[in-house]
Amino acid sequence: MQIRFTKMQGAGNDFVVLDETRGGLGLTPAQYRFLADRHFGVGADQILSVRPSPAAGIDFEYLIHNADGSQVQQCGNGARCFARYVRDKALTDKDQIRVQTLSGVIAPRLEADGRVTVDMGRPRFEPASLPFDITGLQAVPQGSMQKWPLTLDSQASAATVMIVAVSMGNPHAVQLVDDVDSAPVALTGPLIEGHPRFAERVNAGYLQLQSRSQVRLRVYERGAGETLACGTGACAAAVAGMGLGLLDARVDVHTRGGLLTIAWAGGADDSVFMTGPASTVFEGQIDIPELP
Image (tube, rainbow, N blue to C red; front, top):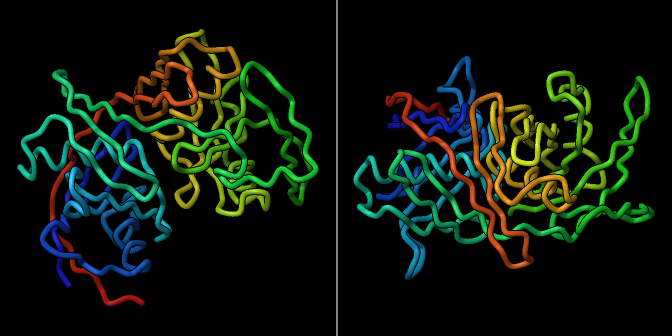
């Protein structure tokens, strides 16, 4: 089967975008893995599928598959690329669209400067929303947040890190570090991602504070490993820092792939807004082998 694709990136988080508005491609998890493979396929952190409106008042449906073929609920950088794609492909003439995801409806908006702002919905902090098993754990309150001890066991040693658990439609475990460049992301990222207390795995965020309005961030994403940027990870990290009383209501998040701006008013019903870049890298077509 031969399909057309568009390669896009948002702050270095890269995607293969597929137009399924005229009909589903019916790809298998193995075929998504093939597309994401940087040696044999196109190469991407995630595969984004653009599908037609599933209901009145919704413009499109948005499906996301990780590089390992698994399907996930949300991707913030992908949402910005999604909005740029449907506008560039003349699938809509709107500056703001409503898009159905597995975790709910989001509303990306194209800005005059070319960046895209996404209403990411409200954050959730109940452990069950991730889900996060807190049986036997003692929380440490700080600000309006709770920090949880998470014991990481490896063959070399055991260590405990303090995390803030945040759901942005997908699960995040955010920890504060002194320096993201020296943070043991490659070592502890997989241990956090696959920790048995997170039944659906989790994204591991490493947050360095520079001021009340500037932070640096690295994220080890579930199903993808460390990426150059993670939109929902930036939202979760900024919200965690705000809730801990360490950050202002608007924060610039510096990732290895670029700058994301996160704003949150701090209320239980307030949405998180993320603004950042989205651009097309190239377009092409590829033969997809028959894979189970």
